[in-house]
Structures are given as C-alpha cells and as structure tokens.
Length: 316
Image (cartoon, helix red, strand yellow):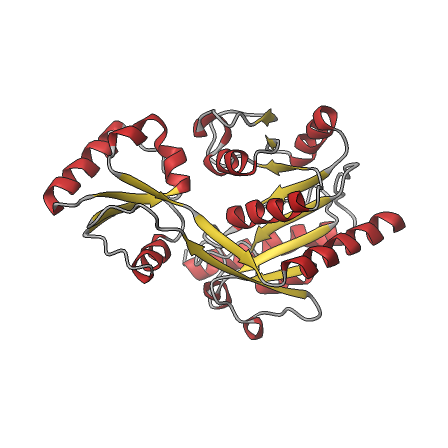
C-alpha cells in the first residue's frame, strides 16, 4: 500500500472525526475557566512549547492566573497527574516538565485533557487553562484557538506520507494563526483569522569552543542552523529521535565522539537537558541553549485575545 493511499485514508478519518464535532454529534467538555489552546498542524517542530512559555509570561505580566494542561507525551504513567518540576520525564513527559520548570505554574498531564482541567480546577480554582498541543484534542472545548504554522507545513503532506496531522483547511477552526520560522500568510488559508508573527532564536552564552552538538528534537537541522547563524561552529553532531530518553550508552558514545573529534565540549537544547536527567553532569563542559521567542505587537495580540474570550464567555 502506497504512502499516498495511506495518507488519503488518514485524511478521510481525520475529516470524518472533525465533521462529527463540527455538527455537534460529538460534544466537547467545558471547564469553568477559559481555555486557550496552543497547537499546530504538523507532528512537532513548530515551537508550541516555547510559545506556551511565552504566552504564560505575557499573562503573568498582567497578573492573570493560569495553569497548563498537557497530554504528557512519552511518559510511562497513566491518568491525571500534577507535574513535579523536580520529577522525571518518564513520569510526566519532557515538555510538561520543561514548561513547569520555566513557567513555575501548575502543569497537569492527562490523556483526557477535560479530566486534567477538572483536576486543576479542584486543586487551584477557576483560572485560565493553557491547553498545550491542543488543536487536535477536540474533546475539550476551548475559548480561543492558536495554531502555529511553519514554511514546511505549506508544502507538506498528511501523515504518514508527510508530517501533517490535519490538512491546511483545518485552519478555519483557528482564531489566531501564528507565523513561525518565517512562514508567509500567502501560503496558508488564513482568511479573516488574526495573524500573529513570532521570532524564534536561541541564547548561546557559555558555549564551548568547537563543541559537539546533540539533540533529540523534531527538526534538529533547524537547531544546527540556528547555532551556526549565532557563530557557533560544531565539529561533530549526534541526532536522536524526538523526545529521546538518554541512556548510559548514549553518554558513553557522546564522550567517545568528543574525544574523536577533539571537541571542547557539548551543546544541546533545554528539552534534551530534561531528558538527560542525572546524566547531565557526565557531559562537561555542556552548554544548554534556551529558546527565546518573541511575539510581534504582543500587547495588542493579548488584549485582542482576552477581549474575544470575555465576549464569548458572556454569550455562553
């Protein structure tokens, strides 16, 4: 069976499910607090996690209380759990841990995000919920839908032939389309949607000379390009699958690669630092490079979003 045929079958299933929600035959659970969903169209690599952290910072600046609801992709546990920032990726997932550590707000993981939200409201009261990677999770009703797109999405195909989880036409459900990585609005059916632009960069302080770069993220070549653009020239590289859980053997292999390439140390991402856990200290010197994301005209964007949410909740 060809990839194109499989992609056609997948697209048919996704479309049928979406129509069931659109027509009200499948119903979404509603929480007491407003839900802001942050999602994308593709399988990873668009910057959802940095955007959730950025949006959280913008809400904090206004004194707005919020929590984060996430599936907890890659965790070995089940059910609804409150993320312990000092915990392990196998218990909560790497991205929820990163959000909890960076944002210092409650992060709740659960396969059923509605149940995760009910848990959060029981523990922390009625407040805004940021729904991480929520565009396809339609079992939880939302008050505002934010979708990040990249230039690759415009020319990609549906899974499994490509990386798209939904066709571009699904953007009709979005309230705000975020153009990431230089995406152009002309490449997407944005219609009358709000169009936001983000700039994504990295902070390369304390990077060793001639480092080995390694990471387990969705689009490692982007990270490599960002390093080189920032003046960091790695002498060797090691790439792993997205959400890779590092082992003792991985650390041994990386140290061998360092010796062979006569590298001055290592450089990796924040998500990989979370997945290294206790092995982090074995790779020295190691620079953990944070992502810095900026939203153009952020004050106006957040004002508009909050105004739309308030209006919708008044009418509901």
